[in-house]
Amino acid sequence: MIDRRLLKPLLLVTIVLVLPLAILAFHGEAFAAALARWQATPPPRSTLALAVVAILASDVLLPIPSGPVSTLAGSQLGVPLGTAASALGMTLGAAIAFVLARRWGRPLAERFASHQALADADQACQDHGPWMLAFTRPLPILAEAAALLLGALQMSWGTFLPPVIASNIAIAAAYAILGAQ
Image (tube, rainbow, N blue to C red; front, side, top):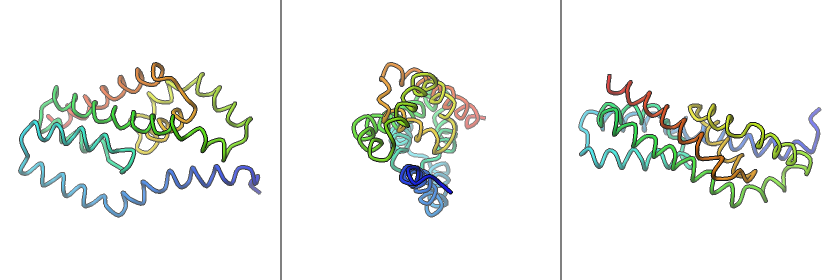
């Protein structure tokens, strides 16, 4: 039997993880078709670069698959510009999630978790937060969940940004190279 104190946090985590998957399940094919049309008749490079940044920055609100978007960026913009646009968009998306969670996440977490659970999470954030960010960046949904969690735990910007930027550049470069091939 599940401890009743865990039901609220478990429900919240389930909703946060299932909602993007449900949206992707209903709109994923339409998004893939739109990307295929863009690849067949691409817009100007500057427009495409701005679109890549905007699309990837909206990832916290919509389930945006960064792999296909970044691969398209590499194929249409080349490796340097494709990498820059993708990395900037992914970093902006993570920063938006982080700032939202820093502002409203802690009070929400305090409603759903015990004082001891939050203290344990705060310690885990200090001990492993940067590694969590670095290793979850290429993983759909978990990347956003890590940014939201660590924002809610009030991680500092100075600790948050370096692993996010470095990971996003590496991920964006890998996809851009793949797209350019």
